[in-house]
Length: 225
Image 1 (cartoon, rainbow, N blue to C red):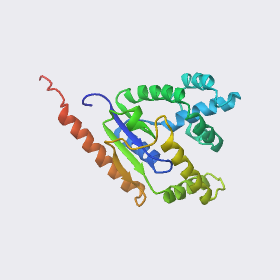
Image 2: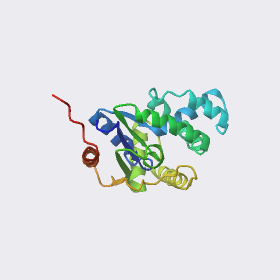
Image 3: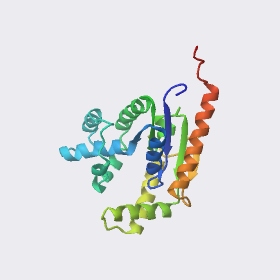
Image 4: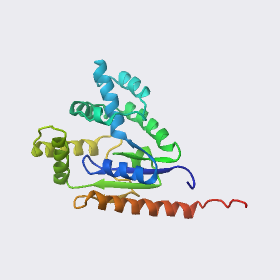
């Protein structure tokens, strides 16, 4: 790959479709995938299992240091209680900086990776080859999240999900450390009226154009015959 690993940064609010898109892009380009939200959930899970105070920065740092980003159990970490705890520890600046460094190391490991979260293009990988900001209306996101949870057997009210998403949006956008916002050079992809396939094709087009632009700036050296 010309001029270093291929890093694709995908940001956006909860239930916007960024995770599904990130996994498909990773498979398409033969890259590793990291849902950075799971790193916070993994730390929260470790603290809860140890009976530690989730606001204990020292305990959070120790849990983060021991974290293996290549072995995150999505199914286990998707539990609602872990998510609630993760949203609280994500406010700890020291922990955020520590996890960002681990995420950067993961991304830089050749041949590259697709990272999705809320601060990938702005903080974690500001030099990513391609940056996407995936969004959708709160109502559409609430409908998607409700359907997802009901498929898992969780009885949930869509109105409550919508209210929770709005609270998370406000918290993520207003926090002092790494607030949720699109990078200045990110491509906006609104999936409100898109199927998964349409969103995927649009994302592939964006990434392909970004890769081509990089190769024009950093062409592969000629190999002597």
